[in-house]
Image (cartoon, rainbow, N blue to C red; front, side, top):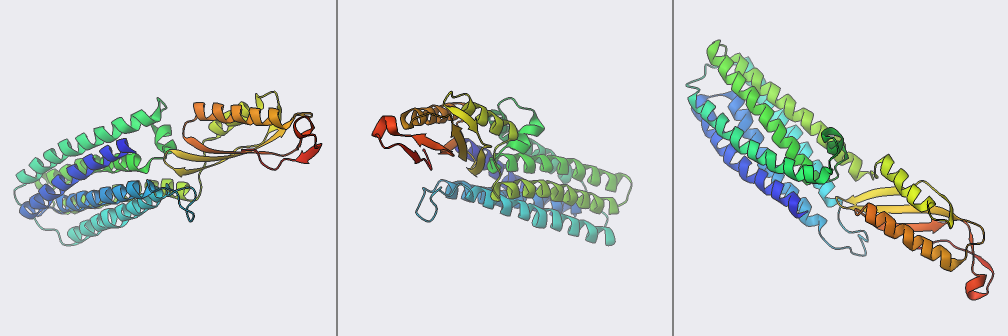
Length: 317
């Protein structure tokens, strides 16, 4: 989580500086695309603050009302960020672009626009590289797109997505400003603003999709679930293990419930020892699985321990 904050702080600092320079350039040049870029950077800076709120709330300890902690706070705030990117970033940019296309006005000297775009590219690129470095550390060598979809840390992949969209928006804004002056067609500047808005809206939809999955109880990948099941079934005392039930309750906090059927004749001591070995092996291989609940679905022979015959074992933790 500390590494996630580094990416967020870097993004906030870059976006505040960029937003100010873009708005100044938009005022001097009258460029609709530059104004859309300024709105985009301002929204991104505010979104970074909301992600910090989510990171802070997610660290709160468990309470009787929230026995598993508040880890999903981060997913909620990342959803709010995605909605703001869609509505304020994408919606305002498209609106500004459409209005400029309906009433195009010739742009003034574009020099300041180019200077600001170059500065913004440097700042956005630096923020993007910081987020990419944190993301690569979490991906553990997996392919980029697979890791992006599989990441459960919204603080990192949201910054990465926003910065990527920002860099694409800078290219579009530069093309719009250049085409407007070179072809003497101010309407193209408005069209560039619409394209920027569409880019932001597309990124926002992807972020909303990821946040929704985590909020409604997304679990681990199928290959991870299969590996957990194999770990349990490798124990000689275990006859069969059911399909693991998992859920992310935080970026680095996974809940696991697992049903097992012990072999005939297994006594309570052997079953408990097997459960401990299963838990230890799962935690060593998958450190993010922090809460493990293993339940037996058969009757355990306790006669060798307490002399009481067979009783129903409802849960072994």
